[in-house]
Image (cartoon, rainbow, N blue to C red; front, side, top):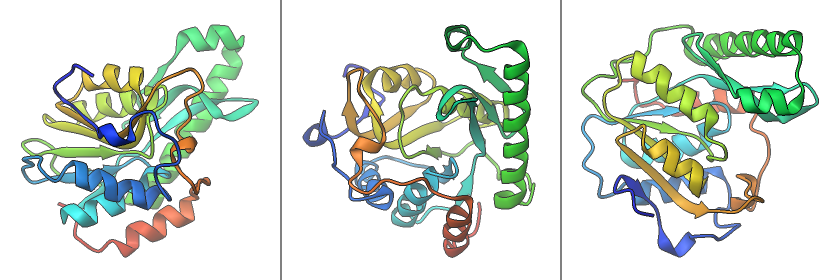
Amino acid sequence: MRQENIHYLDKFHEKTGVFADRAAGGVRLAELLDNADLEQPLVLAIPAGGVPVAVALATRLRAPLDVAVVSKITLPWDSEAGYGAVAFDGSYRLNQALVQQAGLSEEQVEAGILATCNKVERRLLLFRRQTPLPQLAGRDVIVVDDGLASGFTLQVAVAALRRAGADRLQLAVPTGHTSAVQRLAAEVEALYCVNLRSGWSYSVAAAYRSWYEVTEVEAGQLLKQYCRPLG
């Protein structure tokens, strides 16, 4: 891995089942960031799966925690596969190649965008009470998710956070596909990924020995339990 702003652990390279769960992934991320020179760090979780990771990371960093609500636009027949994403500021981006490959009609795409916009609005109300984001400029903003597969959702998140004023963005994920990591690293100041893997069969879930879909209720409870004030 040649890019100087990519940080990972050699001992976990190309391995699966390296984390007990998402919280353990967050702890490993904190170890990776131990030597980072961070100024006024702010941890932003991508809900819902990124929240357990972010809580563990923010706890170790003793940093304030908030959320950046971004959600993928999923195929009508597969809730795991996304062909775009919607961000907290209402912006969205489509993977046009995948839209064409899947044979989606204009009506299906419009319905998907609308449903995802409604989901983002609901999560903004649930997790943030629609309050403004904290000050982003002049500090290290660490965006956390549970993994990086295609990287499309985090790419949309990065663009929205740049528009919101973030000038020092870091991405932190326990696991990521090598090609997506390289692509996203070009758009941020630093990218931290404990477990780098390659290959067509890559999946985020394979990095975890315990994997399940994090509900909005669980994510909300974790955020409430984390009592350091937002900064």
